Image (cartoon, rainbow, N blue to C red; front, top):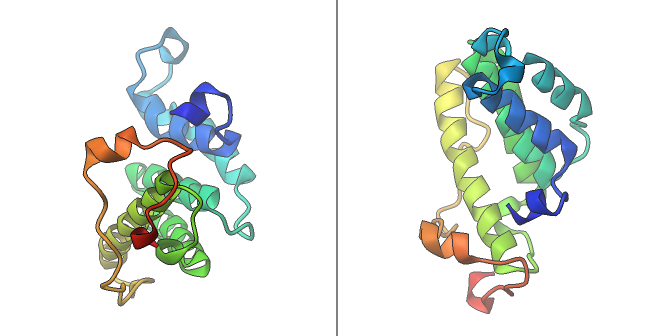
Length: 163
């Protein structure tokens, strides 16, 4: 939220979030648009801005959001493609073991990793294809308690035992 408040959230993430959430808006701007169609243009623009060759945390997050947009629209194949890209990016980054400068960054990586493991299981079985993360490592810590996570700040250095 701090990145959003300071204007540091990448535009591609904002567009993907709006694409997924616009259907729930009660704002007058969307008053004449079918709720199911409200996010379409935002989704298209986010997809245009996504560079699959840029392997990054932002890319992973956008792929997850766009995958959710696709399945909401009933496009299981499109969902699977985006989730597959997210999983592959996370593997290339070695996301759960990646060196981090802050506790917030470390915990975010862990949370995204576990999210991808769950998504990969559900999405792959839904379209009857093999999982991308077929044997996730057992030594990745589970996400911390939610209130502890929400209290983390950008400057909190990681605990050496967490790396």
